[in-house]
Image (cartoon, rainbow, N blue to C red; front, side):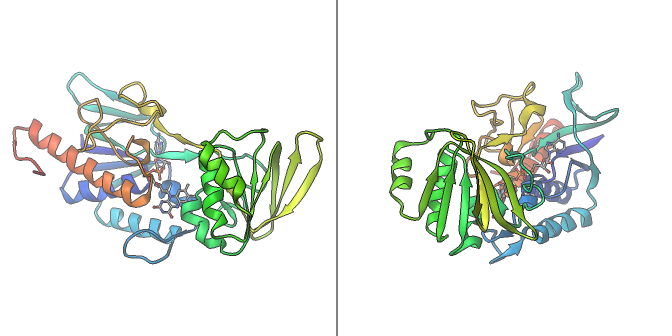
Length: 311
Ligand SMILES: Cc1cc2nc3c(=O)[nH]c(=O)nc-3n(C[C@H](O)[C@H](O)[C@H](O)COP(=O)(O)OP(=O)(O)OC[C@H]3O[C@@H](n4cnc5c(N)ncnc54)[C@H](O)[C@@H]3O)c2cc1C
């Protein structure tokens, strides 16, 4: 039986694994990948200790540390988490099952994709999903933002201060964003709004060179030269796995306490999958540490050792 099974391979899970292993907890990490959303980023410029680091290198550094600490790792997708009558957990990946005293769900989130040709091929090479993170890479360049909600308009506004020109492309005739945000965007000289148009293709060899957008009113197709495209059509938390056993908020995020506890004792959560705001690597990492220490304390208290980890 493991002391904890950590589900996920993003910064929350990797940091939880480091903290759990350093507490001598018998730890299994089950992840579909190493890196999580960091795999979609190009350079990370807001992680303390590094002015700028390639996302791939930061993932490598996180995972090296986890491997050196002897954490058992399984690359797979967890299909089910069950709490058993004896208070332990059973975590299944298809036919294989593992048991643990605690589980840490660091299952994160995923941005919605456009699902058009060129998107996956050019991800991180002009196709971006986070204006706050990747915006500075497009200084004085031309970019497109796709979407019509608050995050798209916010991204357009952020990018208008960095890029020379921003196309804001939305498939409907009206935006679904705050009035003040829309007003600001409409008043910004270097933002060109293209409504009722749908991006159908992202073109480029080694990096994004242009996009093709279909005008939905007259069916015409126009090719717009751009250096980057920000897909801002929303995020989805990966919480289906836990939805039936823990309490979620209205955004389907896992509700946690300040020790990372979910509504199900012994099941902890961390990172973007939780209701904690400001989804960033440093925050997910911090929460991973909290969840691991929370799980450690839970085991200690259950085994009669009343000493708490934290004050
Ligand atoms: C394009 C982009 C650029 C970004 N740039 C920055 C930046 O510059 N700075 C910054 O601070 N933040 C940035 N972010 C945000 C940051 O990446 C996230 O906040 C952070 O990765 C969240 O970490 P997490 O571990 O909670 O979740 P995630 O990174 O989403 O990881 C979740 C992990 O869980 C795994 N998983 C999910 N379900 C299962 C399952 N059932 N079984 C097994 N594994 C499962 C996933 O495969 C993944 O490995 C960026 C995000 C994006 C999309």
